[in-house]
Length: 169
Image 1: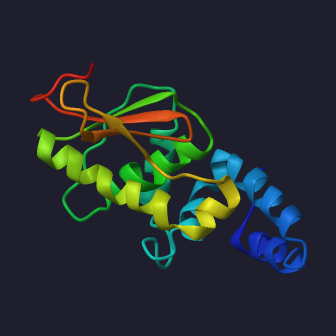
Image 2: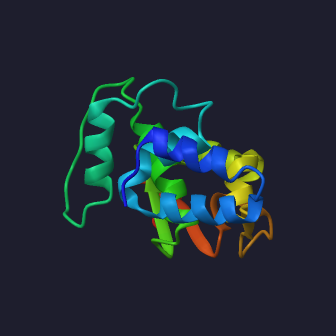
């Protein structure tokens, strides 16, 4: 059920003394995709500041739609933030996918785009409190035995950076 910021604030203030109940309620509230903008502001206040723009709300609808759609927007419209951090983290914490391919123009930039989400899963204490241990687990290269920079597992979901330069395995 979609709720407002005022309703979320009431849940937070009413249950501040019962952290187990609060954690459960937050998990349930944010599990409703209609609350994605609250999810973004609650877990990422250091990224999402002020009011969420209307076009971001439309993007969230597209992102979570079952339709095959394409989105284009100019630089500076927070596409990487919306899809690469907010949408991806939502998919991971609610286990909406089992294997996620993250794509960009080339392999180096695709790998670079994975770093912020890995950092959030390691350091975002509120995200970890509500959803548990989200520490990314490295994947070893079959040939060298070294950690791969382009693939990791978190919450039993594999995330892999792919581009036209590299084929997914």
